[in-house]
Amino acid sequence: MGLLANQASVDTRLRHAADALGALPGVRLAALFGPEHGLRGEAQDMEATRSGTDPATGLPVHSLYGESAASLAPDGAMLEGLDVVVCDLPDIGTRYYTFAATLFLMMEQAAARGIQVVVADRPNPLGGRVMEGPGLADGFRSFVGPLDVPVRHGMTLGELARLFQAERRLDVDLEIVLAEGWDRGDDGAATGLPWVPPSPNMPTLDTARVYPGGCLVEGTNLSEGRGTTRPFEQVGAPWLDAPALADTMNRMRLPGLRFRPHWFRPVAQKWQGRTCAGVQVHMDEPHRVRSFAAYVALLAACRAQDPARFAWRTEPYEFESDRLAIDLLAGSPQLRADLEADRPLAEMERDWDTAVAAFARRRRPHLLYPEGA
Image 1 (tube, helix red, strand yellow):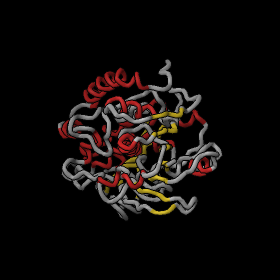
Image 2 (cartoon, rainbow, N blue to C red; image 1 turned 180 degrees about the vertical axis):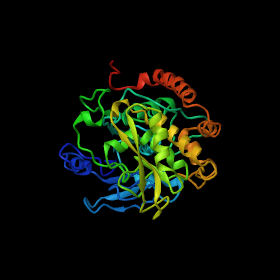
Image 3 (cartoon, rainbow, N blue to C red; image 1 turned 90 degrees about the vertical axis):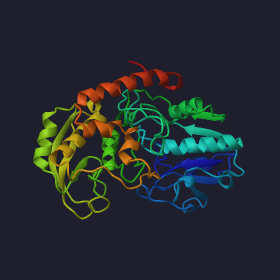
């Protein structure tokens, strides 16, 4: 047996999946696989990890996030001798979060070698009913967009695996171990499960709640709060007017949100060591929050303050250099074009809602948990 997991792959007693599987009778856990951030979660975003030996178990660890795009899929040598690969990757319900892409690449390679894939499914911490954001246009598939689903898709990793298998006509022996007792209306707080950060900049459930919109900031020259204790919940840049930005955002009365003028100094990544002015995003009613629309509005407000200094990220992003990061994240150039044209948010939301309605029908055959009320 092989195990694709990370530091958040624990049970309710906080026992790691490698220890749980290794203790099963009749099972020989032979190899471990680490996604982005590594098996034990110590690597930052877009930081390559190396294969080696896991100090906790003594087992070989194969990195699925190295120096090149070719490193993202397991090769034949890594899979040699395995009968089954168990995938236990706590996900956060957002298209750009890379664990789903790693699972899909594992499924493709397992199919080619007759290896069974078992997904240990987990609840979607954002819940399974609300969906938001655009889908993925032709030509914009990437490691942060491996499948045409809305940015916030309302599916579990097991359901995404079923959708991927069906739409790619993938001949893989796929088994999903259900997250027993989960209701689609339950978010991470309602499950009572412990929160272990699935990546270094996902420290709390609140971070996950804003991430569907907050990650868009990565596609700009604004700081998304990496290098601080509240990533994605604070956004800023040295030239912004914090009080004016907060006032603009609060006047929009976005559901469940308030914005506070905020100054912060990242210790790493964008604007390292520089004081950034901006806002901290506060959630009064998390279940009402639609973070994708909210952060699109926030990007528009930041750009409006100083269009000359606001810029789209042009550096390579997740092994892609021929398309802008914002286009990869949004799934097409349309969002960038809309923001540059100062298109009203309500018009953009109508387009996204149309796409979501079509996707809701498309995903239905692959759901494992009732949709309910």
